[in-house]
Length: 359
Image (cartoon, rainbow, N blue to C red; front, side):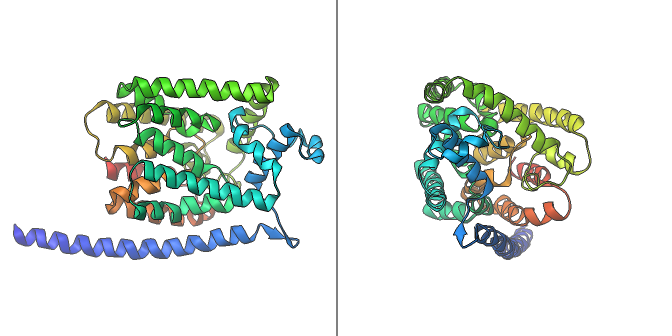
């Protein structure tokens, strides 16, 4: 018996060492992509904002009327495709130069993720791994909002038991881009955490009311039209498109295999119901081991619109757990863009495999 345990420990240590080496090599390969993306923002001897961050800035400029030239951009493809509360953080971007916007947005995102890690009492080593994880680097290189949403989701789940009101406020703040928060009501209801549930609801109402007060009621009609249209166009466009390569959902996996818009949505709806039931069971029972990383996996599977850059919180939660699941995620997230561009989107399969390892 003792000999068998020694053999198992021997092989386990060798596999862990191999996974560490493969993860490091994969990370270095992905790092080259992110550096190239950042370098691509510099052309014509000046800095140009990445498309997503430029979209946030343009929306703020249209509302604040800080850029007269933006008045003609009302029909721009990205105009008001995000919920009106998102404009509360996007509008200030129109007050500065593109280079300043990029620096401030990146610093704000990194600070939010570090603050979330410290509020959850995560070690600095874990925070560092979260900052250099492929999803975080991708998000920083393209100026997206995934790190900010990851920080809010991390707090909404991680503080649910110890500080339910703070958790609910963080969860309610996800109304700025709510797709990753679909499972939060399930988590709070299953654990009978009504204080978090109520705090989240009040936060949503306050942020929506504030956005309406500042930007007017017409902004909601513009969002409902443009937002739904933009989302549908991104999902229904023939595979492969630029935005589709970085998505990690069941819908986009099926779409990359040639499944049509309707049937892929039906399958995604079935998966959403299934993961909601798993989440209910996970938060209803006494088992708390690996609850945080497992729920973060489920959150990405529950929506048809989640991207690799939305997984910074998952990277950090897995760094706390360590083990095979962490190495699996590190390798898959490092190589994901290579696989998605060259073949099909396997993000949902990788997340499902990770969920199996955790549960």
